[in-house]
Length: 614
Image: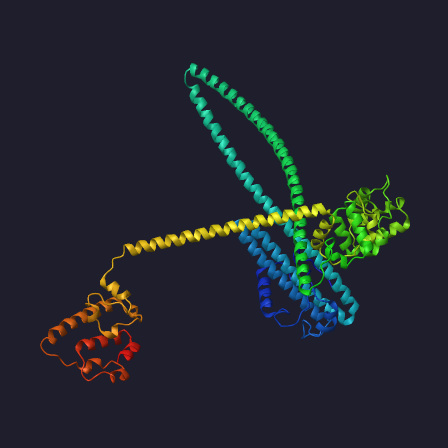
């Protein structure tokens, strides 16, 4: 078959079609594009390059792209070539129209973007064709189809990577072109401004030249002055920059000095803070220890157990005489209490009790040098300072998680310049106890009898001062309370003194043994009102009491006027509100005054009194 090239952007002319891009050819391509359906439009399953080729061979090729033709024949290949040619010509025609439209507008970025889209569409069409060829080839030879698909996948990935890199470079080039155009515009603007300014200066010079010769001389002088001023200004700017640099250097030195001072102050503050924290921890441990001693004392008192010896306190129940002697020896040598507590409470040191102090200090190797080697140096260099057994013990201690400080303490038998090599039997003897419980006990044990007595006196004095302060506070509170009570009594007396006493107030405050104000002598008061019982008149409102008093006096005046002529009959209907048991006890005839008094007693809820009278 003869293959004719149809151009750089088109396929070889496999079907004998004319390569010239005429209107008739485009119309034919358009008709073919309308009749032809892609594999995606047919609903057929299509395997992309990202899936496994084995699945393509064994599972996906049961649904081939051209299901109405036999595979691997010439007609199917020609049909595929026709489809490929049609697609390529279609996207090429569309890309040409878009490029022409954007070339007229002058948008270079859109032009490049459509070029990239054209390449991507073209690559996708090639992928469809190649995978169809792979499927057709694999029908006759699976290995050939697999090899062809593998080669195309690599070529496709390479082309895609080149396209990505090309797009990135194109974008950078476009951005660079935009920056260049912007800079050219700015340069052009600045140049035009300078040219304009130069033209103005030339016009001014020409205008000055048109004047007299004296003005020309002045112009020359002014120009010289301007040049001198310009030179002086440049010299001043240079000097100013030099002064600014010197000032910045001086300020930098001052800031460095201040920084050094701040660092030193920070170090001092840190040391003071650590010291204060240690003191606070020690005080806290002592306080907690005293509290534990108080709790133990309460327990002993509750169970009537004998009090232990003051020296070492409850530790005598946990230690034998040998360990007590070691404690006495350590306290006599003024061993640091924190170090002693760390030794007796650390469980990790128990397996290495027999190895404490096995490595003596020499001029070549001391505790500080060993600490530095274990922290930052080469540990293999320790072989020349110790034997194999000691080195094995050291490595074993490090392997079990002991820090370098504890390792140095155990091997050298020294801590903070003190010899503690004899304290090996005490390692871990008090494991599980809290350091704050041990600190006050050991501190008291390290004191002499005089020191303990002196400390006890200080505590008693402090407690006495606290008690005295509390007593003073209580006395002050009592005096303030008494002063407040006196002030309240004074105010109450002042209110009572300035209070206006009326008959109504006296009526509200009377007892049964007293008489009503304004009702006459004791003989005029009814007998049932003469009693030592309290009057419950405080339940009434002031308005009701005033009304009651007015009614009583009005009734009394009316009865006094009537008694002089005729003794009227008291209607029992006025007493219908009385309870039935009290109404039955009233006589058939009663005086109006008696009825008024009875009504008043009922309104004041004097039922017990009425029962007593009747």
